[in-house]
Length: 127
Image (spheres, one colour):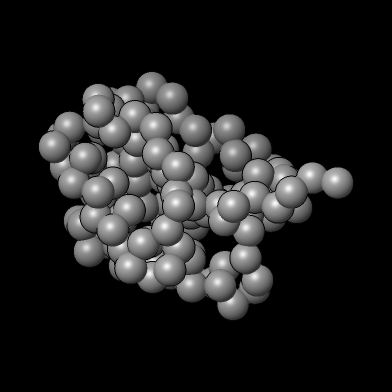
């Protein structure tokens, strides 16, 4: 039997996690925030959120703020990749995976397209 993902949570906690992520990104002035529902399509998470920062410094600040907000909301223990370079920071918060890019890097990888090949149309978040 496989152990549950460290961030695996109940329905209410998942909703709180999603709201925490989206509110934190909005508060940090992240740009072009897109959420993609991948529940039932991948066992790794229920949602992928993609956002942009204007510069290396902005991407790092967005990621730091999100990690602090997740911890404060009781969703600590998120795994982070890419923070030293701040071109593309990936934050795995369990049921929500967040990608924060510099705009040029985001355009190059275009991961929204990878996750929305079928009926999972991205949802743009206005904050």
